[in-house]
Length: 348
Image 1 (cartoon, rainbow, N blue to C red):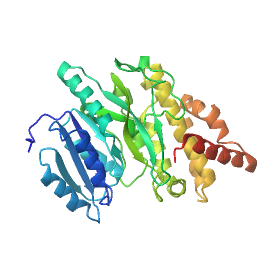
Image 2 (image 1 turned 60 degrees about the vertical axis):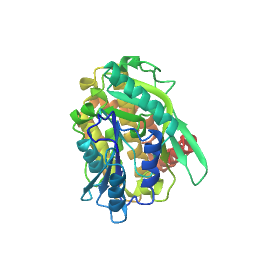
Image 3 (image 1 turned 90 degrees about the vertical axis):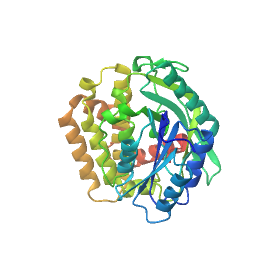
Image 4 (image 1 turned 135 degrees about the vertical axis):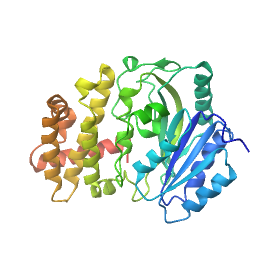
């Protein structure tokens, strides 16, 4: 069995809550895709699970003690589990893989070859980006999200070299593999017991990433479509307060036009933040929570007070205007446009 002292190129953090039914597939995909390589590390974070997850995590560690570690904690939610994995990581790079998702074997092999090459040549890359695939298992369909029209390929590059991102090309947690020291330096403000923290994970560290590399490989397989899943529309409506909480944290992370120097990164981050404001606006209209409209009004008010330039871009751009139309007819148009977009881009 490989020694745990072996230098780790990459750590895969697997936040796991009541994940007994799915975690074996996830872990096996990483082990097999890496060829059981001693220079990878898998940290299973048992987030206070009530099922067989703790026992399974310990069994995996016992089988592969040089590669897999089990961490047990009181239930803190997805964000706290992500941070626990990051705290324990010894790899140069850190990638989160949710317990019900998996990695493609061929793509993972390619990724490891590239990362090992960086290590051997002493090339510092702060962010490794790859494609992800929406796997709608129950429908038997899948949709790959790639970045070949927005990012240079087969080279280390900076934000000044990126192109324009389409609305379906946001850099999500699934596509990101950060350098561990960069991610730690970001001091991620991930709140406990809150969904949608992956948006903070995919936003706050970006200005710290000076060098990037994009591999046009379909690495991450994102299982989607399960009833009760956090991105399911009904679930998002029910958890609207958490969406507002995450959006506020992102709002307060930066004064984008003062704090983010590369213009193309600033433009991308402004678009991402506008998308978050749009989601709050749309789901307020879908919600029957009597407080939702007050939350939205207060959020827009606070954004204007915090940074008027960010407010103007978010509120008076196409998305801001289109999702905040007055009257019942305007609300109906907004909801219809959202449902059309979800069919086109297949994001839930």
